[in-house]
Amino acid sequence: MELFDEGIKLTKEDISKYEKKMNTKFPEAYVNFLLESNGGTPEEDLAFDFIDIASNKKNSTDIREFYIFYPEGESSYDDIIKVNYIMKSEGLVPEECLVFADDSAGNPICMKTGGENQESIFFCDHELENANNGYLLMSKVADSFNEFMEKLYIIE
Image 1 (spheres, helix red, strand yellow):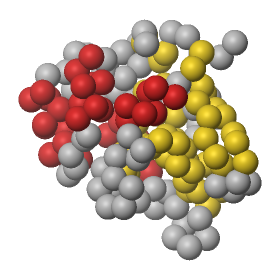
Image 2 (cartoon, helix red, strand yellow):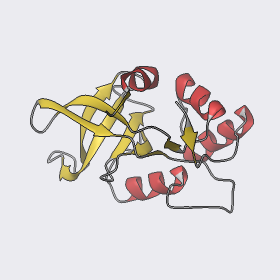
Image 3 (cartoon, rainbow, N blue to C red):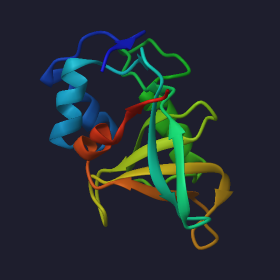
Image 4 (cartoon, one colour):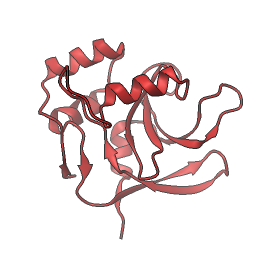
């Protein structure tokens, strides 16, 4: 997958620093992705399918962007640390979630970095709320980052 508007190249040391800053441990597959490309926008229009938990029916959406890790002192709307801080401080996603991408409608895509369903990928519907905990309604997409990446397909 080719990306444009990528962030600066990351090293393992950079990633370890970001893990400490975010108080989490990234799955190995995501670390490998970050070493290859620090976020960005897919050159081709990519989508993925999932079962929507609200309707219990097949749904699909696109990938608008993978969020970027910026050097300290720099920031942008697609800054992964900033996005995660806002989402968690507003109670939209659980602490053990890492929001790493979004779709063209602004729906976050996250991975669990701890707890139940660790390393699983979720589509978070920004228009629906889980009545039990107040988080965005989360539909499971894949059991791992690798499985998620394998599910991506080019929109015809």
